[in-house]
Length: 77
Image 1 (cartoon, rainbow, N blue to C red):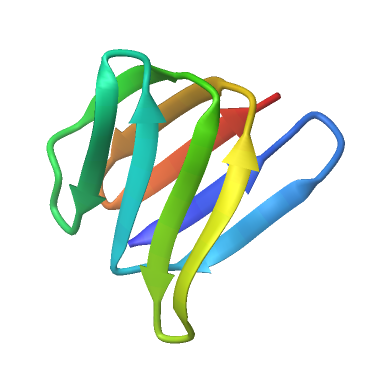
Image 2 (cartoon, rainbow, N blue to C red; image 1 turned 120 degrees about the vertical axis):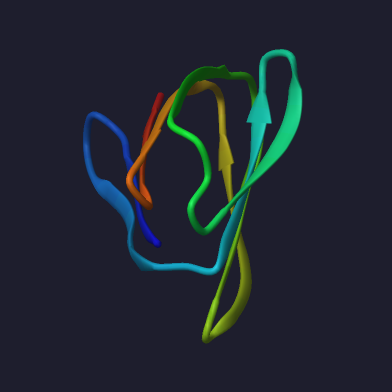
């Protein structure tokens, strides 16, 4: 899957991942390959993703996520 995490000032991460765990407003959730399409509001917390280099985490204050066709776009502030 392709993950992009962007803020108004920079691209925080862009690359291939195996899974992503996001701090949804209604609770944390994990996106895996071939996940159903969705748009969700994110609250403050950590976006955690696993790729070939290991598990990494980025702290966010909130934002939105769009999941569609194995592409995950996270817009944060």
